[in-house]
Amino acid sequence: MSHESADTGFSTRAIHTGQKPDPRTGSVIVPIYQTSTYAQDGVGGTREGDYEYSRTANPTRTALEEALAALENGRHALAFGSGMAASDAVLRTTLRPGDHLVLGNDVYGGTFRLIDKVLTGWGVTYSVAHLSDVDEVRAAMRPETKLIWCESPTNPLLGISDITALAGIAHEGGAKLVVDNTFATPYLQTPLDLGADVVVHSTTKYLGGHSDVVGGAVVTGDDDLREQLFFLRNSAGAVPGAFDAWLTLRGLKTLSVRMERHCDNAERIAAMLQSHPKVSRVYYPGLAEHPGHDVAAKQMRRFGGMVAFDHVDGEQAALKAAAGTNVFILAESLGGVESLIEHPGRMTHASAEGSLLQVPAELVRLSVGIEDAEDLVDDLRQALG
View 1 (cartoon, rainbow, N blue to C red):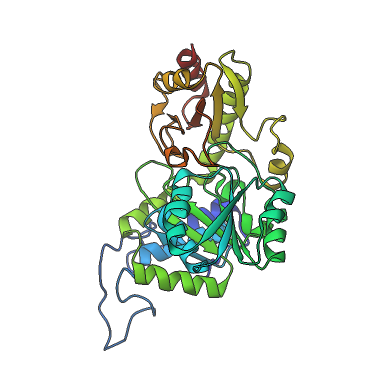
View 2: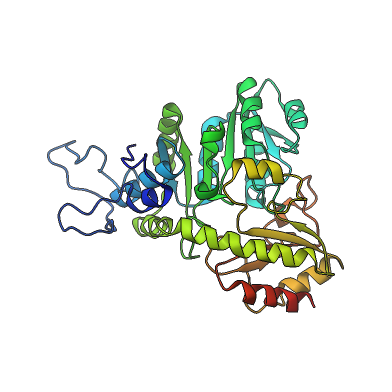
C-alpha cells in the first residue's frame, strides 16, 4: 500500500495521503463510491486490479486505508465495520484452538467479552497480567502463547504499558504484540515504531471524531499477516460501507487539531478533579503522580483526552454525578467532539463484573470533548456538588 507523503508531517498526510483530486472531475474530496459491483473489461478484466465487488474492495475504503497506514507508519491497513470486527479478525487470524494469549488486566469490556465468551469456546486460553509489570508479563508467557494484547492507555483506568518492553517479551516468546491504539490515536502514539506487530482501532472514536460513524481498522507492517487478514475479511464480510469509510476519512483530516484541544481540556479537568473534595483518585497519565507518567511521556506526544476518577462517596454517588451533568452527555463511547460521561461498571465494562477485570464501582469515566474548558470544569463541579 503506497503513501507517497511518508516524508511529510502528520497533518499533511492526514489530509492528502490516498486522497488525490479525482482525475475525471477534479473533485478535491474522495468520492463516495456507493456501488456494490464494478463493470469488467472482459471476463476477469477488473480495473486497477482489485475492483470486482465492494466486499472485496471499494475505492473510498482504499483511500481510508492508505491514509490510516500512513498515519500509523505501517505498510498496510484494513478497514472493518466496527472496532470489534477488527479485533475479532486479528484474534481469529493469529490464534488456533490450543493457543494462548496474555491479556491486560484493564481492557475494554467488549474485548474481554469477545475473548472470554467467544474465543474460549473455540479452544483458546488466556491469562490476565498487569502489563505495566514486565516481570508479571514474562511469567504469564507460555510455550503456546501467540499474542500479547495491550491497550495503552487502557480503558477505563488509563494505565500505561511500555510498548517497547512488551514487544521484546512477545518476540522472545515467539508471539506477536497487538496494541489497541484507540485512546492515544496515531497522532499521540505510533506503536509500530515502538516494536508492536499490529495496531487495532475503533475508528468510531477519535479517528472518526464526530459520533456519527461506527468502524474499525487494523494496521501492520507484516505482509503475510495483511494477506491473511484480507482473506478473512473478504470471506467473513465485516467491511464498512463506502459512506462510513468516507465519514471516517473526513474525520482523519482534523485529527491533529482536535487531539490538541482534547488534551488541553483534559489537562484542565484532571487538575480540577485533583483538588475536589468529592474525588478520591484521578486517573490521567499526564499527572506527575500517575505510575505510568514517565513511560507515557517517553512514548506519547501528549497524554490524551480521557480522564477517569473515583468518587469518594462510592457507587451511588458516582452514579448520581454521572447523571447530573448538563454539558457532558451521559452516554457510552468516546472520542467525539462532544464531552461524554459514563459509569463503566454499569455501562461499558458491565461484562467484566465478577472477573479479574472488574472495574471499581465508584469509577466515573470522562471523554473530554473540545468545548470551552471553563464550561466543562463548571459542569463537573456542579455535578459533584
